[in-house]
Image (cartoon, rainbow, N blue to C red; front, side, top):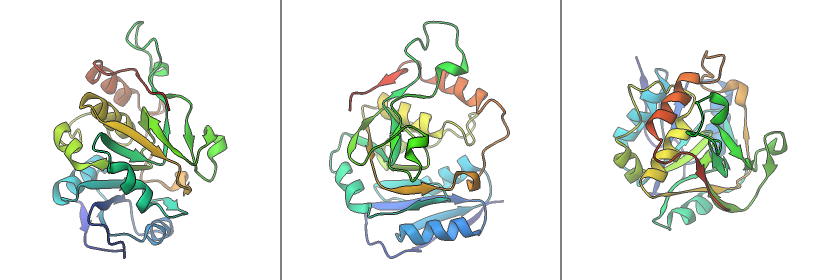
Length: 235
């Protein structure tokens, strides 16, 4: 059973953005997360991760829903930078870490393999350990796909997508691929802003149990979004 904790738990006064957090439990990393964002938010506690995402989508009507991992600590002002991106109506998704390519160039041209999937071109962020994942980036640019640690999503895009893909293989892996493909399919841009933050990755909601890092989920993304994959952008 999902325990739902709702209401304004921060002092942010944006009527445009609601932070949406799925949390495994009341642990120190969650309190660090909430304190750092200091913004109005809604939390789903326990239950399935994707089901929590869907519940947050269904019960919040703000134009922008900010899905944030429960162990992400934001380290500098972020609200104005994110809102500025959404002033452009062509922008559907904004995040803090992402890449210029989703899927290898040969994707769909040769027999499928999981190695052809992934954020495969110029991963960038302003994470505390950015250099261990790609390279440090503090400005803003178009990207093909984000990392799901922080994803601000235009609610209209989720409406057009039919909400989160409940009933699909997706649980933890590939939520970011899903929204990148839906944004591309519906003509929206995905943007990266290099906001400083820290991801306490080992404490995240769940890393799943698939030793291949989401084999079934990646295959579903490929089969469902052949019309848009691979995705490439120029920053």
